[in-house]
Length: 321
Image (cartoon, rainbow, N blue to C red; front, side, top):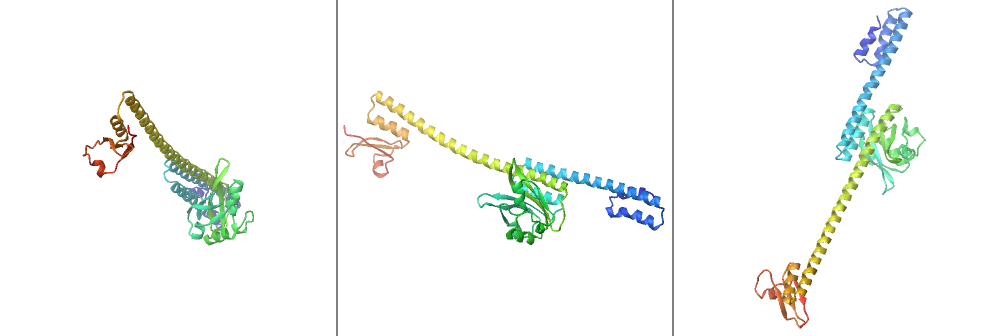
C-alpha cells in the first residue's frame, strides 16, 4: 500500500474518518514501522489539504451568500423580505437550527422578534425581551458579539423567566448573537442558535457580523426611504398650499386692479356688480338698504324671476343714494 491512497480519498472527497483506513489495513497486514510512519505522515498531510479545501469551499459559499445579500439590498423593495433572506442565509451557512433578528421597541421599552427562520415555537416567535436581558441584552449593551455553548448554564447575562421559558420551548441550547450597528448605535441583534451544546468558531462569528452589517443597511435604507417619502408628502402639501395662496393673492390683486380702474373711469353700481360677479364666478344681486334691487348680474341668462326662485349666491347690500 502506498501513500497514493490518500490522494484518491481526497479526489473523491471522502469523509475524514476514512483516512484512518489505510493505516489500519497496513497495521493489520503487519507493515513495518517505517511504512506505518510514512502512511501516518501522508495521512496528516492529506487531512490538512482536506481541511484547507473545506475552508475554501465554505468561504466561496459565504462570499456567494454575501453577494446575493448585496444584490437584494441593491433592489430593496421590501425590507422584511431582505431581512428574511439574511436570517435564512445565516441559518444555512452556520448550519444552525434557528436564526432571527430582534429590534428595540422605543414605545414599549423592550425588544421584539422582527424576523425568524427555523423557529417552531409560537412563544419564541412572539417573545418580547426586556432591555438588557438575555444574551441579546449583553450584545446590545456592549456592542460586541457574544456566544454561549450552553445558554442555561451561562451566568454572564441576566436570565428572566419569560426568556428562559421561550428558549426552552424552542429547545435552544447554544446561541451566538452579533450587533446591528449604525455608527456607534446598536439598532438590533442578529442571532444564530442550535438545539445542542456547541462552541462557535471565530469564522462563524465573523460571518454573522458580515450578515448583520447587511441587515443594518437594509433597516437604515428603509428608514431613509420612509423619511424621504414623508418629506416628499409634506413638500407636496406645502407646495399645494403655496399655489392656493398664490392664486388667492393673484385673484385679489386682479380684483383690486379692476375695481380701481372702474372707479377711475367713473363706473356705476351695474359696472361694479358685473366685475364682482365675474371675479367671484357666479350670479349677483345688489340690494339697497330697504331690500330693493338696484343691480343684477345673471351670466346664465335666466329670467328676472331667477333670484325669486333660486338661492342668491352672492349678495351685496348698497346704501340708498
